[in-house]
Image (tube, rainbow, N blue to C red; front, side):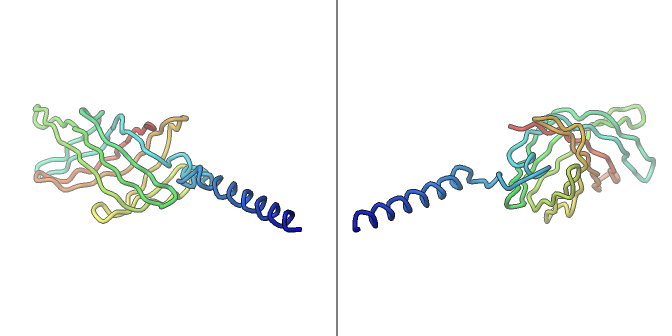
Length: 169
C-alpha cells in the first residue's frame, strides 16, 4: 500500500511540474494575445518616415511633404504589460523663399498602449499625451503606422501626418 501511495504521489508531482514548465516556456505570456497586440508584441526598428503637412509661421504657411532623411528609431511593445517605449528621429525638408531648410523631427517616450482594433492603437505618455496610430500595409514582418505630429517650433507650428514604417527585429 505504501508503494502505491508513493507511486501516486510521484505521478502527481511529475504532472504538476510538467504543467508548470509549459507556462514557463513562454515568459511573455504571448499565447494569450490575439490580433494587433500579438503582432506588435516585441521589438521593431523604424525603417522609414514619410510626412505630409505644413509649417505655419506669422509670415506664411509652408507645405511639407516627403520622406525623412537619416531616419532611425525603435518601438518596443510589451503587449501583456500594455506598455511601449519608442524613439523616432528623422529630418524633413522645407523650401522657404527658394531655400531648402532641414527640420529635425525627434519624438520619443514611453507609456501605456491600448489596442483599439486590428488597425488602430493609441499610446499615452506623460510627454506627448495620447497619440493615435492607424495601421496599414501590414505584412508578416512589418507595417506602416500613421499618426498626427504637432509641435511648436521657434519659427511656427508644425502639423503633419507622419507615416512610420516598422519592421520586426
